[in-house]
Amino acid sequence: MSNVPELIWRNGKVRPWEEATVHVTAETAMRAVNVFEGLRGYRQPDGRLAVVRLDAHLERLETSAALMHIPHPGLAAELRDGIVQLLAALAPQGDVYVRPSVYVDTGRYTADRTEMTTGTIVTCFPAPARPVEPMRCIVSSRQRIADDALPTAAKTGAAYSGFRLARLEALEKGADEAILLNQHGNVAETGGAAVFAVRHGRISTPPLTDGILPSITRATVLALAERLGIPAAEQSLTPGDLHGADEVFVTGTLDEVRIVGQVDGYRPRHDDHPIGSALREEYLAMCTGTRPALDASFLEVLA
Image (cartoon, rainbow, N blue to C red; front, side):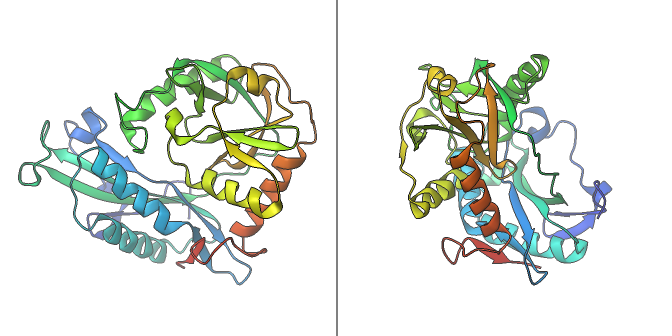
């Protein structure tokens, strides 16, 4: 499978990639009226491909669609079928990144199903290379958009214009990623990952009430910490908490568990990142099937 796939699943069937088009005036193109998920599939020791937390991702996608008033009955079942069909057609050899989405084609200011047309797509790409070096972050001058403006529990393309501007700011300053604050000046998240700080052997991460996406990887890492006997809590964090932390790391589908080497030039006290590294090792071992998963729903074999 090349970096540009030959095939895509759209509206019920696998099609050639170049056929996946909408009009330039479609709502998804003009106003980013869409919701999506990102899933990762890992090759297992027996050679089969298993997707991490498939049910949880599809459930969150349905929640996102409801929050954004995008009615599409049977969405989770339809996209599950689409994922299975596309993986079978592409027959990828390695790990993959899968993105199911539902979008609004026509129906500008309506949530009436009879006046709105929606579409569904599933794309599949080779999983990106896993970075080895710790990432460099800045605290962005741009805020995470507040829940009373746009639902923070919705994974929607509309939110990613803000994330894009924050990422561009980070790149302009020589960093890899931006950490956004909420309207109260507390740490929220990056454009694609939850943020964790470690101090005196204890993990802290912002609560959902601080305006962050309900990250599935974040929940997994909190459960992993409990299994490993590492104290962990959800609590608000300030930029100063990150600047003075013993360790900082982020978690997400693409980042998995990624170590942060500096925030605004401040380096964590523990250069060896013992807790973040232990969680990263355990998480990747679960994903690749070399250590027991947290529960039966963690991995679902699809190909």
